[in-house]
Length: 119
Image 1 (cartoon, rainbow, N blue to C red):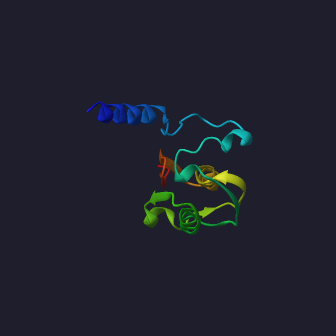
Image 2: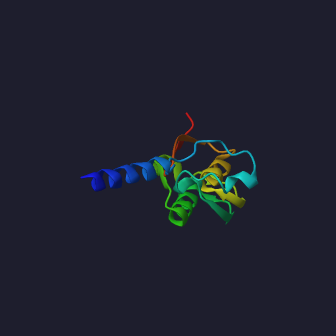
Image 3: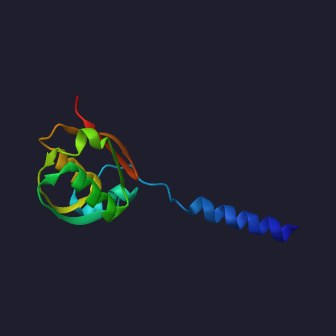
């Protein structure tokens, strides 16, 4: 009986030391970006995307990273987005893609970005 209690206590101690909760700390510079990853939408990638329709950009980024981009394509697919280049998270790449368009990010989650028309 004491052996099982010791094993259970050891497992609880190990579990308590494992800090696997994602960080929600904002990232302020490129050096810190590698340390903060909370989901598939926050992994760094090297992007060089041309100016294209939003549906094409969203599909390219989602397939490359596994980050789900939720949008109503009947409203957003034909919106032209600017070129994006650099080492960015998908979240940053989407935000840069929406600059100067009628689209906006309406929800951010670790593995999901929702984009809608800015009404």
